[in-house]
Amino acid sequence: MTVDQATFDRLSAWQQQHGNLFRVRAASRDADAWVVNDPGDVKRVLISNHKNYSKGIGFERVALMLGNGIIVSDGDRWKSQRRMIQPAFHRQVIEKLSDTMIRCNRAMLQRWCAAADAGTPVDVTSDTSELALEVILRSLFSEDLDRLIELQGGNPFDLLVEDATRDLALAMRFRALTKHIKHMIEERRAEGRMPFDWLSMLMEARDKDTGESMSERGLLDEVMTIIVAGHETTAGTLNWIWYLLATHPAAEARLHAEVDALAGEPSFADLGQLDYARQIAEEALRLYPPVWLFSRKALGDDTLSGQPIAAGSDIFLSPWLMQRDAAHWHDPEDFRPERYADPEARELKRTAWYPFSLGSRRCIGEFFSMVDLQLHLGLVARELRFSLESNTPVPVEPLINLRSAHNISLSPLRRAPRRHPPPPP
Ligand code: HEM
Image (tube, rainbow, N blue to C red; front, top):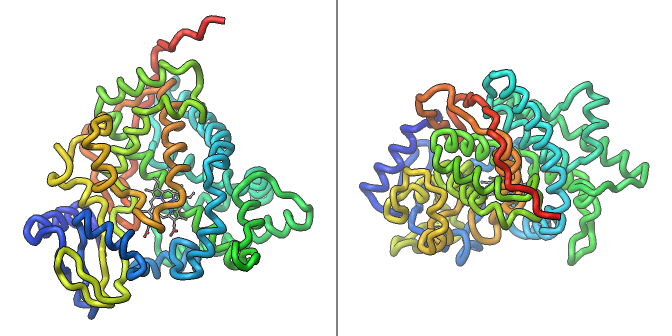
């Protein structure tokens, strides 16, 4: 199926015509399929009655790449995996991993500064994709990533950046990379080496009830899941953020004022002062939610908005649709990060904003991504601003994740130094 802006226009038109709960029919399927866009219904599916819903259609394709990793699994297996993985995403772990984020960002910033000095544009789409991948791989494998690159004469995971298709051939090529992870695990075991990273944490994780560790297959599936779930979503968000800032100078200026007020290069400790950076990320996630559509299957009968939903029905949830709905948001098509300073919009964030999903299956990487996005914005905006190469609006391409239909090229420009003076000794 080819999906593009027309898909969104159709979805919006159906919603306007039929309301917040409507049935769609596909000739290829027997079951009813419902698009659910009422905040109360979405909460029922994802939170209060979530036990009645399993992962739905579309996830078979994901399973080809990820095996039975946490994003695909259901029931007791999911519960056990989630409990074992959760500690790797605790605040203290992310705080330590933020050093890795900063190091990766510095390296990319150096390249962007060199481009600014040479007066050449940068391909923000592919550079941020590379950056997001590096942050995830270094958080997972730390020093072993350098060993792998040296051994292989390059980073074999780069295929995720180089090949934008997510077809069967790519899934097979990606799956074949598990051999490198297997090798790392064996080496760590043989050397008794457990560096501080997610791979060590997953290797050492034990099920609370049984005391068992993950099977080798389970461990590999979770590593592959984290790579895919964490890479493309963050990359897409970074891509749209820079596009939005390049086209909204007032927001860009507010970000500059915020980073200039910091005493130095931003770090984890400064996150509380990067409030506007956080609002920029939240607003980009509202307008361009990377997971723009996801699905569930009803296990038993249910009722949504007074309408009986038969067991076996497919349910489609679209953050895109709700987050651009004028019934909830003022000027929904406008990029206005400062809207979140308003108590009403903060409340809306709890009801009509769900780029990370909701409930027990809410994204495990949400805090990690928000830290990553804020630090990236803080680090880059201290040095550079961007101007758009072409004024033609960039169309969206909603595949599994929401992407820009073509790569975005921006010209980096050095900012005049107007830093906050260092504090008195
Ligand atoms: C802007 C960044 C991100 C967005 C918008 C996002 C969005 C989502 C969404 C919507 C889901 C739920 C899908 C569903 O229930 O069908 C999800 C689940 C998940 N995400 Fe993220 N994600 C992001 C970043 C990350 C990162 C950085 C990681 C890991 C490093 C990650 C790992 C996962 C995992 C493992 C799940 C499955 C959780 C479960 O089923 O228990 N995500 N994400």
